[in-house]
Length: 509
Image (tube, rainbow, N blue to C red):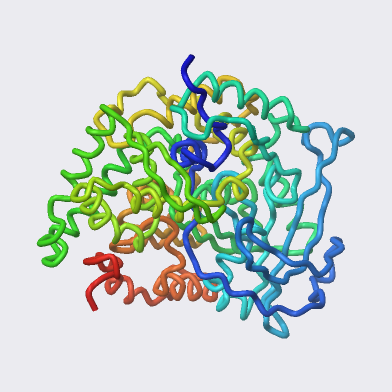
């Protein structure tokens, strides 16, 4: 009997493959600094009808916390059945530090799909501090995430942590998740969730808002913009998902394209080229070796603090590399990590770095909500039979997606859902040149139909780029002015990639 694969919803053991199968948007690394917000609930607009109370926000897996004001509204799970089941929608507000804040707050749309906006705040708050000097920041946990009837999948504690991926087991665990969730999974789509957001806006007494989305959150923001344009003052889209795209179809070729950019930059850097100029060829050779025979490595698990044995297959290697491409800082480590793996035959450090990057995502992403969105909105347009065997990643994501979505209830999607959003409101689009999941040409597709846009690309950067000091400054100015023409973008030309590591101690000084 062949060994059974681990639970597809758990990050443990051979977690690199399994977490990737459903995680669409890795969380950008950032420093966690406890916020210093007031311990009393700040004044809301006079028309506000939500009972806000002081609360403490946190991100799963992190000790950091941040004070905020939190409240709930109730909405119908089925929007066409107002007398049916109700679910809570959780709202967190990081109040402006101004005595008299501007009347149009920023509504933040989290990524994933499956991340909760309120849990993301402790990671993004430093980026938005300048914006908070004039405006409240409102974070709504999208239905199915955080404290909004979270659709979290159960964990199989008896699984084989290091067995090969088994699609039959994936199907079994998907069925268990589906059957244990106390929800009608058809009603957790983006379109319905944006109706919730508008109910929150109205209940809080805001006539207009500024909307800001990252990764999948850019899709949510575009849906909101299309449904309620009269309520929107400005839009920020970071790492853009165009509406016409079935996100996931091109994960494998987009990873290869991002890696090509990383290694091209290495070739064009004298020190990196001298030391690691052949690292892309080395990576391809290593993947070919692992396709023939997987290796076992022992590494310290940063979560449990003990050594653990990890099975490194070609798929595991590909997913490890993919997680390391989500930030410029970890992209800078790729040439030396690959060179070390080839030179010494040791994969321990490569596996450990990847674990460090992605550990904890299990608790952050609500897998059930993620499946409800993906299977309803993306899967019907995805060709799961496309041949990606010539890519580093191959077809593991597509095959797992097919297995899970064939079992998952799907919500109805409007006929025009995939139509590009057309607007003349000011829109700021931000992309990273080396983004492996939402590359710059995705933003170009969305920008065609946005007549009043500013579309910027950060050279040498990866996914979720608003945190870069230049883009933080530009985003702040854009929201303050509400204009694409009154923003100083000179700093964009000065953006550079993180310098390549020339030794395990880091880059040359």
